[in-house]
Image (cartoon, rainbow, N blue to C red; front, side):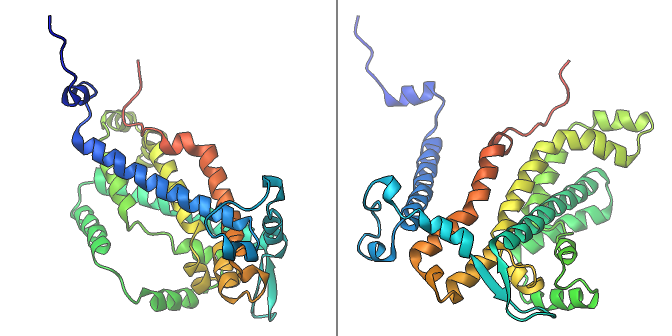
Length: 306
C-alpha cells in the first residue's frame, strides 16, 4: 500500500485556513512586530543619556539593567510641568499631578458621554421607524465621507457665547454627539438583536427607558464598554482640544507637546522626550492589562440560556 504524499493544500483544508486568512495573519503579525519595535526603541532610548543616544540609537543601553538611566523616569515625574496664563495669574505652573487629574476627568467624562449618547441615538434610529431615522443615518455616513473644515472657530464662538469656554463642563458638552463609526457599530448590533424580549417587556407595561436600561443595555454592555475604552484612549492622547477649548486645564498630552517643543531644558532632549511619552503611556497600558478580557471578549448577542 502506497503511502499518501503530504499536501499543504489538504493540510490547510483540514485546518479550515484559506489563503486569504494566511495573508491576513502575516499582515497582522508584521504590524504587531512594527508596534513592538517602536515600543522597544522608545523604552531603550528613554533609559539612555543624551551622549549615549548619539552613538547608540538602536541598541540596548550600556551596562547591566540596574545601571541604565532609570533616573530619567523619576526626573519626568518630578519635573514634568508647564506654565500657562490664566485670567488671574501669569506663568502659572501646572505640574504632573494636576495634568494627570485633568486628563482623567477629560478623557473619562468624554469617553462615557460620547459612547452613551451614540448608543442611545443608534437605538432610537434602529427601533423607531420614522423618516428622520433614515435621514440621521445618512447624515452620519455623509459626515464620515466629507471632511468638516473650519469648524473650530464656530465651536469656540458658541462655547464663549454659552459661557462654556475654558471649563471642564464645556469639554463634556462638546461630546454630546453621535457622529462617527461607532454609531454604525451600535446600529448593526441593535439590528442583529432579537426583539422578543423587548416586545414581551412592552406587553408587561415596561416603558422604553426601562427596556433600554434593563434589557437592551445588559445585552450590549460589552460593546459599550469596549467603545468607552477606545474613546478613553483617543481622548487621553488628544492635545488639540485642550489647547483650543480649555487651556486652563492642560492634559498630559498637551503638556508633553508643549514641553517637547518649548521646553528649552533637559526635558527637550530625545531620551527625556521618550521618558515622558512612556510615562503617559503607562496608565493606558495598565487599563488594557486590567480590562483586556472585556476589550478582547466576544460581544453578547443572544438571549438567556435555559
